[in-house]
Image (cartoon, rainbow, N blue to C red; front, top):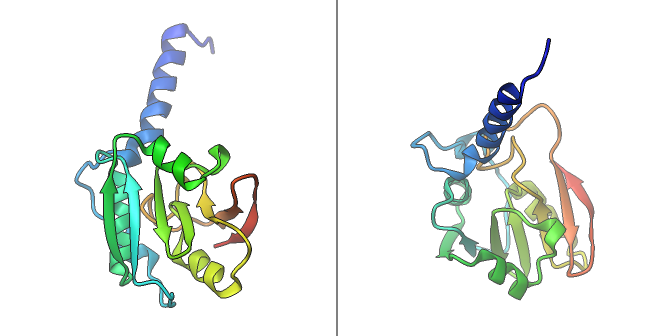
Length: 163
């Protein structure tokens, strides 16, 4: 089979659309109930910074609120500046940043990992699920493969746990 430029471009466009589909609120149903959590945290209210047009960020807010966490949303058109001010390293970035007590939570991190963070109190700035991983809260129901969660500080990102 010969791959033409047209086929290659069409395939690339399809993959690009699939990759960003979670960022647009297309009126679909929330996956918050697929990510039920029965733990506890010493934090009742968090602040989430995100782009106002990102649908998956709203899905993550739904997930947190479904699990009893009050979310204050700070929509911003300059999320990169917020991340810089908070000290999120570039290789830890995702589509939203939460101030979760004394820690940061970057992206679609399951609450089980956040609970482990507060239980162990490691010397880190926060947790991240870099990028926008499929099968994470706000990005679809849990998948068959474990989701790798990383810890970070201003200078390093390292493996933390799998959920």
